[in-house]
Image (cartoon, rainbow, N blue to C red; front, side, top):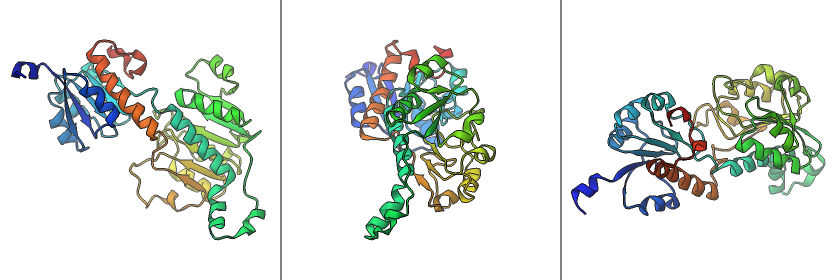
Length: 328
């Protein structure tokens, strides 16, 4: 291959790698040169990205410094749906779109939230502990609840929240939805009840599950005020983003029996450390931000992250997957 042909290739930087199925899409193109970096160090990413046309990224920060130093950059594509690690303002200033793997993990996260809902209701870890010791006395220490006919508040009716609603309704729950940013008729069509003010309805809810983005309006959306008006038998699930729930207030609520239990897949600081006070409690179910990380979802994310890059190169990007549509 001549040097001229080599320089005509579009360069794609894979930050933190991709599943093999996603890489196959890149290798199938003879007009693409792939660069891989496993580091999340800002300076190392900046050096690797300086001449690239596209970036795929898992969880590493893509800062203004990296973006402004990448003079040929035409697309940043997230291996996932969250983008709080990407400097969107810098992308806007440079006219560069940010794409997400919009349809890749919605089923997986909805299933994980439903798993937490059921696990907390049935108090599975409490009974598992006794069963492993062959102690059947716990059979009559009744700590399990049915979810049927219980009231569930779903905060956020996007791709994930709407699918959680379907699953909760299938378990005969009474489902209420708060999302002022979607067509309210869509919520009604799903079989759920539209909520105008989530605080007004909190005292009646048996469980709350969060599926909204983190922003200025949702940071600390659930804190001391909210926990004080929730049922002491209720529980909270967060598979959205750390920071939507105030962790100190949650700790206080769990240790003072303001609420019964909680399930968290996301945290203020990630990766979290064992020093987090919440990790010492028995009435909380934890997972390490893996709600959307199943075998199937990982394949879907890798393929869509790559396809978004290729679609920008081929001038056929779907606006639905672009966060900052103003740059299109």
